Image (cartoon, rainbow, N blue to C red; front, side, top):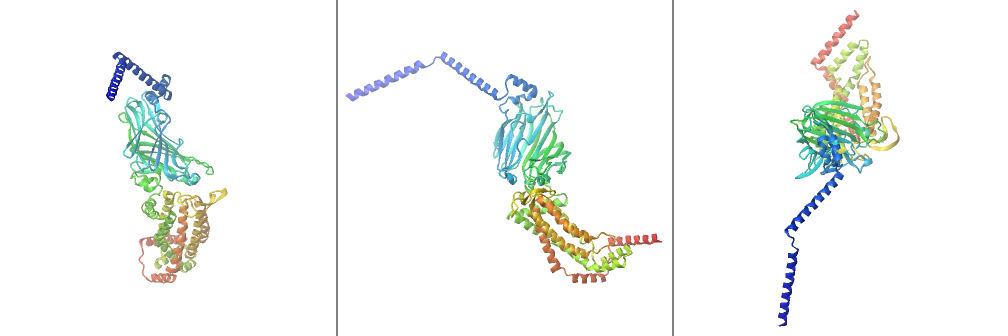
Length: 626
């Protein structure tokens, strides 16, 4: 009974408490008038907060009346760009696996370009290669407005917007004259690509930009030194361009100042030996003014910059708008990489003209790339050299065979010289007759040397252009694309340098012994001609001059090239030793020549012409004596 009483009490208490709560809720419920007043207060609070935010923005951006008036006076319609929150000196970074870029709000251009995975020369080995940094490059459009202003985009603020399409990073930079009026730069960076899409377009600026005047695009750059040798890097740092549907040209890298103009330009490259910055356009620039200044006045000074490049092109405004589809390339000057884009960018590489470039493109680069793909680069150079010498060994054999034939005929030529010493014309005729009957061509020794010249020149262009050799070590050489210093001199020797490179010394020693081996045979083979310079003395001088020139010239060149010449000359010495001692038999050559003398010879057109000319000259000489 007591428990029931407690339950009733509990229920009464619960009801009482609930009633009290309901009364409190009812008594605190605002009336419609109170609700309306509260809404007004909230709106006032929001307006106050908005005003506070606006005031805060004014502190960062120039939107006060005085500043706005000043901006309006200076920038006209583009004063709107100065009122946006993006009107600061901030940067937006886009980055993939191989390239890192920073784009500036002010100017909207690339303010920093870093090539990932590649370091500067060994003095600053911890620094990555940066083609653009610290304002060494500028990209500017000159805008002529309808209110007679001349504005430069590099001085104006762009509004950035970053998005992604799949794995592609897209950054648009808009220079605004209003909410829907702007000049836009559009950057698209793809994965693992040095090449990025770039576009320039305008929207709603028909009443802002004066379409009767072109928009001048000006791109300039002071190129940073990235390699160990200033002189070597500067030699291969130049401005290159493509024009008129596929033609290509460059500005002279050795001059203090160089300039040129070109029509219908499709790409412009600022090349820095092993790296390059390229601007490409689908709509050719009608005309381009190109300039190059050499900034290296003294190679003894630790120079920061090598060249200053400038390219100025007018952009056409069509129907009041700009619309250019372009590309940027920031990356290694590597033949395979540039060639894969199928934009004729392989012409940026100084591989040589004509047959020299053909040999490099279709023979040397594919072969060396194949070899270096599965062995160290130093060993690859040695194997490559052996293959080249084996291919050229038939030419070497022909050259030495010609020398051997001339050596066999030397006694007979000496007899003719003695017999007709008073009649130079007759002596010449009889000598040519001897060559003809013996089946010997006195020019045969020169032809093999001429055949080797394209190969030698192609190789001379090949090694400085091989990006893959950069910072690859072999033996004592730390970088096969630069000189191999084994001793630093306390002074500088003119033309030689302030260091001693070992590979050029070895190459010079090898060429000395090679020339010593061939010079002796040539002196024996070539008889002294009356009235002609003494070739034996000239050859003796060349025996010492050539190695000395190689020693001096190659001291600052790529150690990979010196390594090639050392191995090449050593192999040639071995080949000629084998030919001389085991292949060519002088007795057999003599017997063959004597046999050739007994055979009737059909006179060729050239020989007949030479004989007739000599006979006419001889007849004229006799008539003059009468």
